Length: 360
View 1 (tube, rainbow, N blue to C red):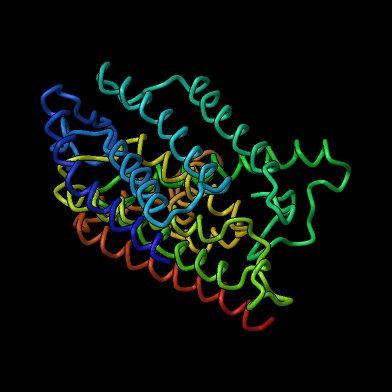
View 2: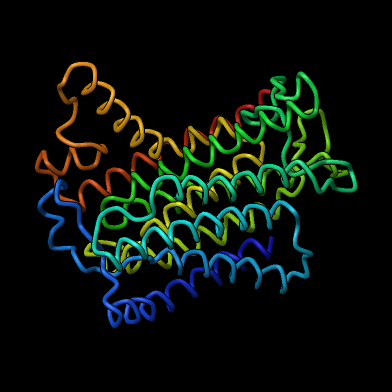
């Protein structure tokens, strides 16, 4: 448990102290945010604010995890390395996207096909590797079964190993793309995505610690309701490192933001959430814990779908937070209320997780 606390503490300090250094570097190089012309007019004042702050979130997370593992004497596990690979890989794709936007002063970065290729390479590599590296108990980081709070009876390998691998790669990449886009869409107001992320990843610290205490390999707690997760404590350490990094970054990202996370941060955080949900066997539960992200995506889907069918809009503007912004709500008010909603979703998700174990 010392590793969990150490990871969160180290990443928090690194993010808190290194973010202003990155801000000064980006200001000196004039790497500022480009504001889309069709967005809320209040956002025009944010033009030129340094972006690509996700570099600090990723760096602080890696430092916190590595430092905690070193102090605790833990050997890096396959699960932790896979989640961090997914987070860093998608963060690199986001970094390239941000850099092109800034250098060319336009709202579009990487061309869609190259962005899909980049995400696909990282996602496929993660998915294939997740079905390998069995532990001494022959348990791999992921399984081909669809999971809710634990693996269900829906097995993607129903027609053989090869078909199972292909279907799992498709399923994993769907989750990776969905969560990456969800965090990216939520990152529209100062501190919104960062605050929601730290709440959600904080919940995964609790999930990981609980799964570790009730793991099937434990001679003391193993029972019929034990969790067949390969490295639950290591996943908790990673989640703690991400939570701490978000805490430290939020100090500078809160309104009025001195820096934005950019696609570098949003894609990385979305990838990390997808990775944690897959490897902790909580793929469907994640949609409850990260319910605020889901809500934001649904508002965008509803807006686009309804407009194509009727030519009319449901919201004044999508995603959802921009609707309230155009309705006259203050930015800080929207962010705080969305944090509250995110906290309620997390409370329900963690409650469902615990209730399932209690009910047996």
